[in-house]
Image (tube, rainbow, N blue to C red; front, side):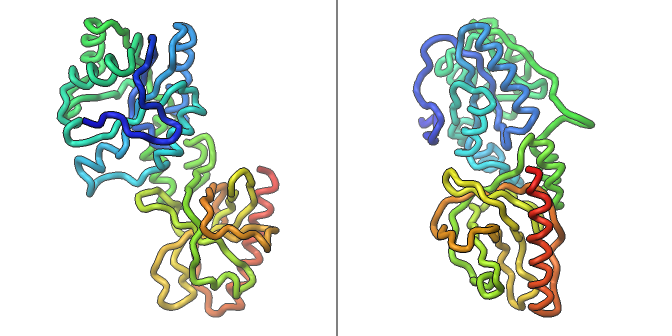
Length: 312
């Protein structure tokens, strides 16, 4: 049975020597996740061990109850990168399946934490549950650890008015409040995709845009105009990004993410893989009576985006 999923940047070989392990989905790798991984990293250094993060792909809910699966804040490649940045020496991506979902808590610990991670210590959040039907608790983990040779520490969830959570970030993005989402993440929410050819209306209006095809299932902010940074390879540009269905033009129903890259009239990026990081909300999506009014507003949008991004 396939246990580890091969993902660029992740590790899929057995660990030699002791490790300090944490387990979770870690979608978004938000400030709460970062705090936990920092503790794992510190504990690993104190023990001369490796800090190992075990995560799941696909999201367990996407397998067990796909109709209720959440939109993801990060694709798995970006999640692995962020987990390394947060302090993980190694990231293991579990290929979640119905078979894995049926493992008892004892099976999960034996097959993953002990046999393949060589855990000397496990650090998890205080709400951690594991095994079939989430039957395993922190106390269960401690009992298994006592027999398996590893210690367990449970940490209170970090937060502000309430614990940091991926669901809070998704809720903020759903209403276009990237300020709250970014505060919870500790960075700007970023989506990735290939630049594809669209209707090319922006070019006719004097604002050529990059139409970014973000994969299905990724959380995108609510319809509106945003100040963004736009990454192509190692280059980062300023952008004015429109999310929505272009209501000024009759018949438009397809939701798009289109970025006008400031001060780069000759930028050729078709078929390139790019990142769009949402820095601030500029305005809600509007329907204009005519194209002239739309162009006037787009000029104001670009001016507003410059004001916002100057301080970033």
